[in-house]
Length: 349
Image 1 (cartoon, rainbow, N blue to C red):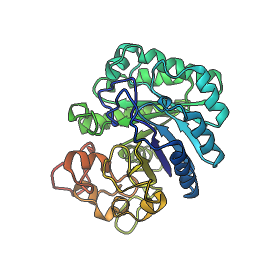
Image 2 (image 1 turned 90 degrees about the vertical axis):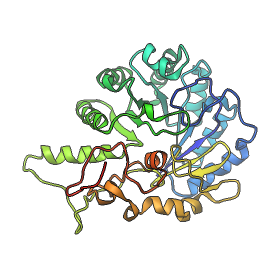
Image 3 (image 1 turned 45 degrees about the vertical axis):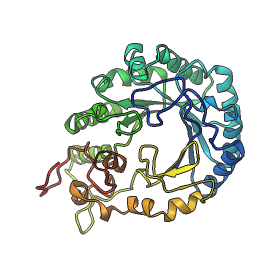
Image 4 (image 1 turned 90 degrees about the horizontal axis):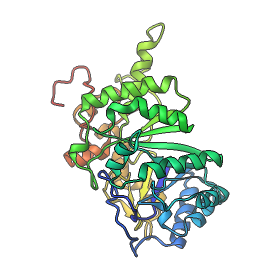
């Protein structure tokens, strides 16, 4: 279970793919410090272990350290995702560590400044991102790289893995574009190219010192399961139920083990799925997560249609519901970024 709070939309970057459509200045209607602390308490009371402060740029909020301290004291494992700018300096990092921050996640969208800065649309962002990660390493803070996979960097995964090794990160978290916010369909990779990228990520992860996970790409789990079956010395296939669906633990997906709160308190199944289910200023977040018709639909794989509806991996994958909504405006439609064709499927992609 993972909860994310978009503290603010304020950010000095102008990224081409920005989910938040970030702007330079803070919104006066942001959740206040008091409201934020109540949110942290409510999320902790749900039994949610992980909480991420995101944005915009969380460092744009002067109460960031206070909020991190409150979350850690409430028993949450707290992570912060600052933007790669001059705003985030070592003294703030030291304060956040002392306040109980468990992990720092920094976006690096290419192995060099030209690639990263071109995507972030601000010169110097790559240098700041690397500086932040190196400072965190020096201070003994656990680190991860967030990488948005798009046409500008899909052929450079090996270089990104080498950079992750050099920086000693714990996790390479790969985000697959959902056309929402400032992102448009031109940033989406074709399904077959994405499939090859997943195979490459799986290869890279086998000898890496860091883990690899994906966001908005649950079909990476299907790729890993298929590889495991192929590489089994005795050719063991997957465990399946009576209907032939692959068994295994369900991963986090939009509305499944995941809840997102906007800077104004709106509750969404994820930051990439802008279907509002409530607002923490008037609704209990636990009730929304557990009983909202939107969240319940997203967790019911029997409602999936198209390829996803007949896919044997729907229980462990389920496809990106955010991408289905963005492209088809249908929460139950097939994920258009998945190349897998279920046996017997005769419909379209």
